Length: 83
Ligand SMILES: CC(C)(COP(=O)(O)OP(=O)(O)OC[C@H]1O[C@@H](n2cnc3c(N)ncnc32)[C@H](O)[C@@H]1OP(=O)(O)O)[C@@H](O)C(=O)NCCC(=O)NCCS
Image (cartoon, rainbow, N blue to C red):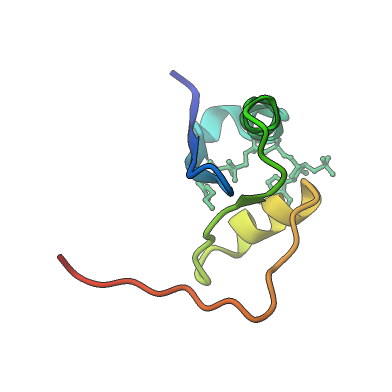
């Protein structure tokens, strides 16, 4: 396995998690292809918008998503709780 992405939806929004490409295979458009396949699946399921979470401490990841056409969401705050 050289790359992976988890993708799903709640009926309203699509979500992509844990996108990763093996460092030896990065910058060969595999990440972009994995995202494109996720988005195609979401479109087929009738979804019109997808969301991801990108860590502040991951500027490379942020740049990747921007290059793929994603935009930062103003007015949204990520929240969580320990279980
Ligand atoms: C982010 C990640 C999945 C990108 O995968 P990849 O296969 O190397 O990316 P691609 O080759 O498909 O690149 C797609 C575009 O993003 C750009 N890009 C990729 N990595 C980049 C980087 N580190 N900095 C700037 N641009 C980058 C490419 O130049 C390309 O741009 P283009 O379409 O304008 O030519 C990969 O770097 C990775 O696994 N990182 C560690 C895990 C991670 O951060 N995942 C994201 C969590 S939110």
